Image 1 (spheres, rainbow, N blue to C red):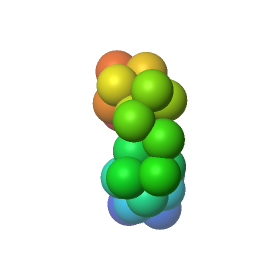
Image 2 (cartoon, rainbow, N blue to C red; image 1 turned 135 degrees about the vertical axis):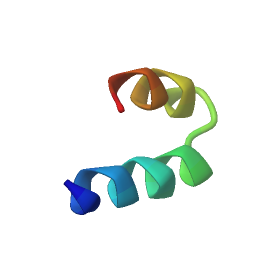
Image 3 (cartoon, rainbow, N blue to C red; image 1 turned 180 degrees about the horizontal axis):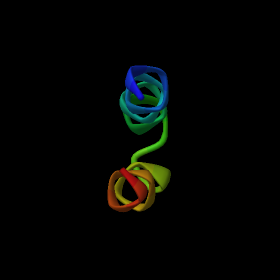
Length: 26
């Protein structure tokens, strides 16, 4: 599951607000 993790990091870099939420999903 490397793809999802990579996407999460990308989104976190773009959206600081959505970043923390995605981090929890990871």
